[in-house]
Length: 553
Image (cartoon, rainbow, N blue to C red; front, side):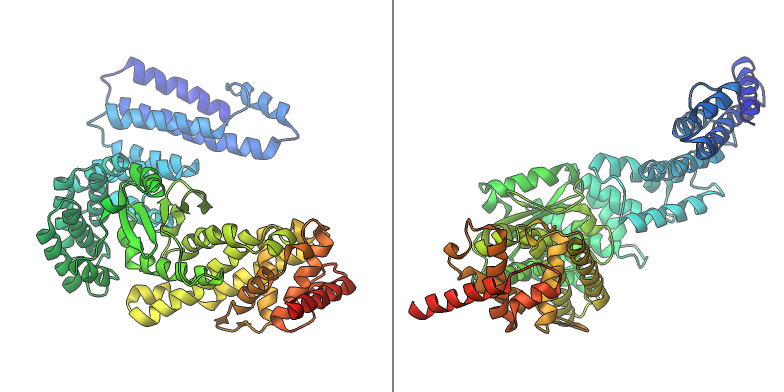
């Protein structure tokens, strides 16, 4: 079969190269591309059948057919894309061009290149809006946008290049609203405010029920605000509050109307803020203040995250976490950047939230709560916990993210009552899922003989869940972290001479003594029930010494 395709390519190539005036030349070009597409499928089958045990035989089969070396299905798909593209770009009068363009989309899909598939699909819709294939391609793009939480590439020039041609093709396209929004975001990020305004106005005044209309109205107001046009900004914020009262953005509009929006210039000398700006700047940065946290996020994500009240949730989370570590309130100004290029939360000079926070609806709030909890845990974890359980800061941040996601977002739902707030509230099965995952990790670590001093964050999180369960803080539709907070409070009071430099066994025994005081039970038995090795006599000795010291003090 492979040999037939290679032979066919040679024949069709002669027609393309030797008969440029023939009516069949575009058909021949299409056939060349289709042959490479079929060869890719055959190469994939060949690899599945022969590799890895019969690699030499696979090479011989392929070379006998006319190929060279071991076939690479991806390279053959790339060759097919090249040949289909030649038909699209060079055979302008051919009625096969839309078919070839759709084949390019399929090649990217078969190669697992989601970005390439989306960009090719958008190009199809821009170049062939009236094709009978357009509805099928548009539906596929809508599914991709839904699954990926928006465009794969959100760099401004990428957005403009991908979506403006769809606007030019006219409003009959099913992706017209999406195109207006994403092209406007791209233009805003590039500083092309006039063009962005034109797109945003067109979208905001449209008749569809798309949530992007409210986002467009918000960005219109925000653009005027950034441009130093307070009267225009106020007018657009007022329109936002009146026209889209249930968008999740109306309360923010009221705040802006009261003149309480962030003054970016106030933070210009704050180094972490500047670092956050530099991280997000390539995607177009929008800035807001959430209590003690300055949040910098890509303009394309900003309306969505604001509509789900993320800034207010971060402010409440900062207060909760500060109290967890013995502070009355957050003790500093902090910077947070939502970075589309990051896969996991990070904490360094600033808090970094991965772009996936905005990739699903409702947002993954825990991805924003995790670095906030980590920031405090790394600095303020009691020494005893840090010695006995070095992964405690990471374990606490995992647990805290789940706790805050469930409790804080539920409170906001009850307070606001908007459709977004209703959707945002986490069902308890999300808590249960995290608890089960963490407890399994703890069980597996203990089974392998891993001590508390070597446990990873997820297993450590399992220990914290076990602690609150023993204290009665984990029940159906209820998650209370008081036992964890009290453990930190008790551990904070243990003098370091009881455990510092005395080895893991003593630190674990001191921790067991704290657990006993925390939840009013035998701490050594609690840890032993989990499978951890702890000396009850050593625990009792430390407990008595602590009691004696406190009594004498």
